[in-house]
Image (tube, rainbow over all chains, first blue to last red; front, side, top):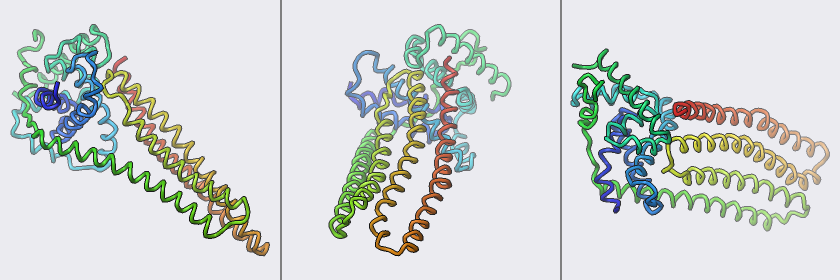
Length: 157
Length: 197
């Protein structure tokens, strides 16, 4: 697969994964770009051991996990928090709420649910995260319950 | 999904506005990335080269007679070179981490790297100070011998005082600063990793 093709096919999906992780448009955009920089660099090391999708999602989710390191540095600078909120007001509140809820989950759950919502097969999710399929199934079930609960309690109508 | 009570998460999820940057923009960024990598490589090499040139310069222009002076110069320079090489190694470890592993493997690798970094940083910093201290001490000997006993001990006294300050104050402070940052990070990564257990 050519890089350009990959880029066009996967950009949106990778962006949403990053957005689910950080719930910040600019950071998500940066994370998605970083992912494609890595994909571009490593494309020749990709051997068809897994599907290209699994491979790319692994890179993207690992890059999100690396973000934790930057987050620590970021917090110290104390930026005003409402900066990003203004930008997102045009988005439908329900979508905004969903992404907010997901970004508040524990880190690995954010990845699992994002991949599930992207319509990725549970067997593939298991291969990306490194857990058993049964484990993933249970996790997805629990996360969805959590989200439903949150929507019921304080979700926008 | 059956238990969602009519909330279609998948539908909501996909409605998120996405703006795909132009591929040209990304390619420009890729080029910059490459350039930055090359630049840092150049910087390291120029620095290494400059220190080597400096050693040769001192050697030839001052013609030290004692072997201790020569060893002193070498040790001092060695301290800096070792430190420099160490930092470059650390960066390359990061670059070579396999990014297409499973999340679980990746997290474990990150924790391992951070622990390694933690060990290396404290050891390296101590090694740096020892090499530098011994180097300067040896280097001074040839010149101190030519002084009166008072000035020789005065010079050594001041130098030792300065080294002691570095060893007992600057070094532990520096190590503590680096370690607490790394400890936080390791704890956080371990916490994330435990989510997968």
